[in-house]
Amino acid sequence: MAETDAVLVEKSLEGDNESFKLLFERYGKRAYAVSYGILQNSEDAKDAIQNSFIRAFRSLHRFRKASSFYTWLYRIVVNASIDLSRKRRRTPETIPFEEGIQNSSTRLSSEKGSFADPSNICRQTELSDTIQKAMEGLSVEHKAVITLREIEGLSYAEISQSLECSIGTVMSRLYYARKHMKTYLEDYYKS
Amino acid sequence: MESSSRCKYYKLVGPFVDNELSDSQKQDMALHVENCAECFNEVNKAQQTGLLIRENLIVEPTNDAMREIWENIHTELTNSHNFKTQQKRSVLKHFNKAKFWISAAAALIVISVGTLFYSFPYKTGNLQSNHCFVESIDSASASIMVFETPKNKMTVFWIFENESSS
Ligand SMILES: [Zn+2]
Image 1 (cartoon, rainbow over the protein chains, first blue to last red):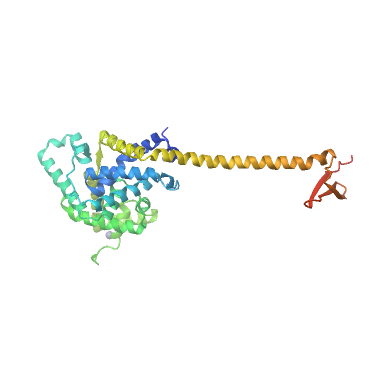
Image 2 (cartoon, protein in one colour):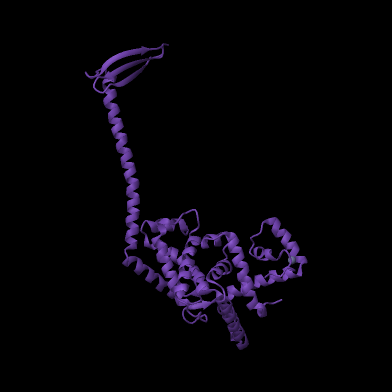
C-alpha cells in the first residue's frame, strides 16, 4: 500500500531523501500544471516548481499536519510562480508539445485520430491561442484561482488555504476570471 | 458595471457549477435553472469554459523532463547540505526525546534510592542516630511514628498499619 503524504513528510523530516522524492513524483506534475497555468511558459514553470520543491523541503518542519500536504505545497508553488512572473515578463509561448510537454487536447485528438483533419488542427490551434490570450489578460492572482479550480479541481476552501485569502475573495476572483474568459470564448461555445 | 436587469440567481451560477452550494441551495438552484433561460445558458457556458481550459491548458511534462527537474532539486539540496541539516534536525529531535526519558529515569532512580535510604532503617528498626523520635500517634488501625532530624529539622513520618484482629 502506498504511504500517505503525512508518513512521507515525516520520513523526509528524518532525512530520508527517497521519501521526499516520492512526494515529488506524486505532486511534481500537478505542481507543474498549476505553475504553467500561471506562467504559461514551460521553462519558467520548470524553474518555478524546482524552486518550490527546494523551498518546500527547507520549510518542511513548518508544515502543519492539520492541513493537507498538497494545499501547503500549492501555496509555495503559487507564490514561487507569482514571484517569477513578476521578475520575468516573458511572452507566453504556444504550447510546445514536441519539447517534452503534451497538451491534453492535442493528445486527445491525436489519440482519437481526428488530428489528421487539417481544419480541425487549425481550429484547435486557434482555440489554444485564444485561451492563451484570454489568460494573458488576467492578473496572476486571477490566473492562480482559475488554474486551481479548473485544472486542479480544488474546492473553494482548499483554494483559500493555498492562496491564503478568504473564500469570498476566491469566489469574486473566480467570478471575474470566468466572466473575462467568457468574452474570449463566445465563438467556441456549443449551444 | 453589472446589468441591473440580471437574474438575481446569476452570481450563484459559479458556486452551483463548482458544487459549492449546500444541499437545499443546490436543489433551489437546480429548479431555478430549469425554468430560467439566462441561468441555464450561464451554467452551460461556465461548464464549457472549464472544459476548454482543461483541454487546452493542462500540460504534462514528460517523465524525462521530470527526472531532470528532480536531479536539479536533488543537486541543490545536496550541495547546500539541506539533506544533512534535515538529518541533524531529526537526530536533535530524537535526542531531545531521549534526553527527556533519560532525565525522567534518572529522577526516578534518585527518588527510589532516596526513599530506600530513608525507609530502610525504620523498617528494620535500626534508626540512624541522628533521627530523634518525637512521638507516636496510635489509632485502632495504625500507628504513626514521628521522627525528626535535628540538623535540618526535617520531620519524618512512619506509618505502621495494625494487623486486623480476627
Ligand atoms: Zn436565473
